[in-house]
Amino acid sequence: MSRILKKKNIAIQSVAVFVDSARLVVSDPEAALRKLQEHGYSAELRAVLQANVPNKRGILADMTQKLGNAGVNIKYLYCSLHDRQRKGVIIMEVDKPEFALKLFRNHQFE
Image 1 (tube, rainbow, N blue to C red):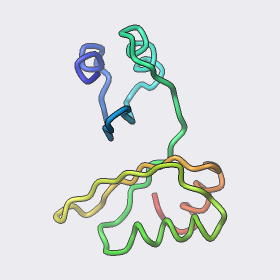
Image 2 (cartoon, helix red, strand yellow):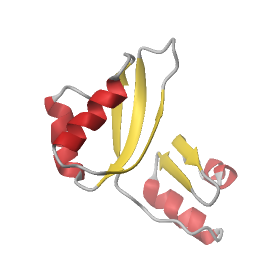
Image 3 (cartoon, rainbow, N blue to C red):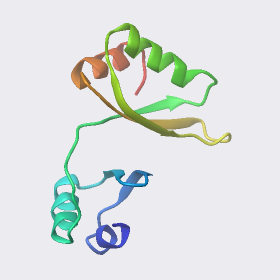
């Protein structure tokens, strides 16, 4: 997949790979979808939230608790953070994306 996207100058901004699937955040989702399907991949577009968060202990617990308390269910989540980075990124698919986005903005998550 990465070779196909590279040839079309589509950047992979985030990736999670599993035994039977992969989830990617890319620079051009529509073009990536077309190219992957043209090469025989079963691909679909899904709306996800990307939160840039401060590098502080407990941030994931804070975010997920706020979502849970507000009745937002997380379908999946993956994140990346290195000890020396000031910020990390959390990618998630939720059942109420617009509501979750408002919740994040109200709690100063980017």
